[in-house]
Image (cartoon, rainbow, N blue to C red; front, side, top):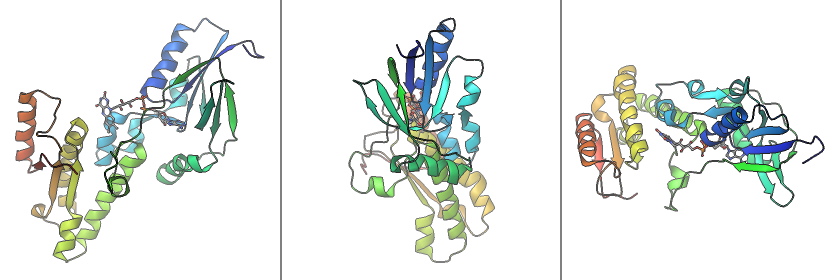
Length: 266
Ligand SMILES: Cc1cc2nc3c(=O)[nH]c(=O)nc-3n(C[C@H](O)[C@H](O)[C@H](O)COP(=O)(O)OP(=O)(O)OC[C@H]3O[C@@H](n4cnc5c(N)ncnc54)[C@H](O)[C@@H]3O)c2cc1C
């Protein structure tokens, strides 16, 4: 207990795990005035990650897959603190939060540069708690493959999705304006690494964007100049799916002219 005599529940991370914990706890504990629930995230919004492909391939606007946490809070019994969690002292039961140091610059840059969301500087904060819930999600795994982290485009955050979309649009823009055949080939070849559900969803969305929109928009680019390739280390695409689903996916991708390379670790 603390000065306010309330039991403080601190939830770190407002992804699916954190936000639903906050919603459900606040519902179950709505009559308990002695409990205070606080949710913390580096972003002011909850991100619906399953639609990142659509943002990366231009069919959905970034603002359509985020929900401001303040709107989720309405009528619910929890508060929100925006800030990047820098550390936790388990013995002292404190979490340290900030938005002004080097480790926060990525989040700040993303909000301000990409989405033009003004973000007033926050001061460093210490949040005390009696109960701590960690829901900070994961990170992309590059499997220590040389060059992958430096040269590939992960699809894990809104920032990643916007970066992919911008990169592909720019590649078309440049290719449309140059004659060098080798360079055009490079600019118009797209490789997705990993043929699990995310890779397959991304490459098929990419196909639709490229063939239904981009090649029709850029006058100097012909359909046959574009190559879309998916590479997979295992023997088949969608390794965890049933054979009939794998077969149907392969057939559809063949019809779409998507090149499939299996047994091909990056
Ligand atoms: C492209 C893509 C497609 C997917 N499609 C599907 C699908 O179709 N179906 C499905 O079931 N799953 C899908 N997933 C997986 C699903 O999105 C994750 O399993 C889910 O998001 C995990 O939820 P989480 O709350 O654990 O973490 P996250 O959703 O990652 O949330 C973590 C939160 O913590 C915050 N955070 C992290 N570090 C800090 C810090 N230091 N300070 C402050 N805040 C921090 C982040 O901003 C984030 O809001 C997909 C994932 C991706 C990337």
